[in-house]
Length: 117
Image (cartoon, rainbow, N blue to C red; front, side, top):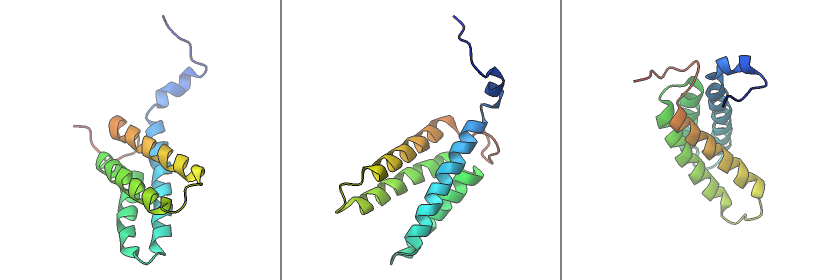
């Protein structure tokens, strides 16, 4: 059984999806790193900036995705202490972690420096 697609021409650009995902999550982690830089423990933001840079460039994407998941979990739990009513942040972190998990399994996509093995 063959299903029809509304826009079959767009399916030829299937590698652009991971690129857009990498860039959006990279900018989100970069924003968190800039926010963390203004806190007393600003040296931790080096990990944020490194992870965001690796994701946006597409270098060591799977390793950067694992580092991003760890960073987002730590950042979520550090902000979550004392604030249990902010469900929007919970969903933002949950979607970001899900996107990083998908990058871990699908790869970097288009315009990345990662080479397939």
